[in-house]
Length: 280
Image (cartoon, rainbow, N blue to C red):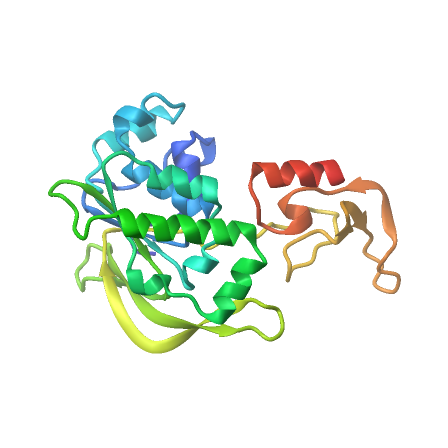
């Protein structure tokens, strides 16, 4: 409920001119620091918009009201916060390269965060995308100077931290002043080969005046369709919708199909959904 906290989805809709969020009017003037919770492609895109020179944004089809607001923005420092490490970053290589390629941008990645465990190596062996993302982050960390130049915009990757709560002053302003983060470590998650972030009980605070939450999406049910509330999908086999019947769960609804995030869950980019649509 604090001022200065937005969902990344609303923010993306705002700068893309979506009518539902054209009146969002985020306050970009009263702080120089933004914290983005999440390290997926949406989080990267939001960071890119906040840090890219507006002279370059003006050549794109960004919404006019967003461009005007960004031209007056005071944001100079953006933190991208992730619960796990660089091996598990949820973005893809192309989107990562795009934000790292912003002109005259200082990028901070701690060398200590790049050390890999045997479980990390195993994860990378099984995923080309994770391997590429880790390689790009490592190469970037090695090529950066130790400190930013005066006036330079900054992008900080913060790994192994999860948000505990938002901070504010005990006054009547009701504005966010920071995020309290818990340090995490990775533990193997059963036999899945994945690793989960576990809290250590150690905390630190990041001061900021703007927070954007980008920790994933969940589809909403559609009237008249069966819905798996745990997975956030319409039950289906390769896109063919399954009926409500609990006793015979593999009865297919005649002529009814589903595609995209409602079919698979909220993962993947436009190309992923293209292949998904072709399969259906």
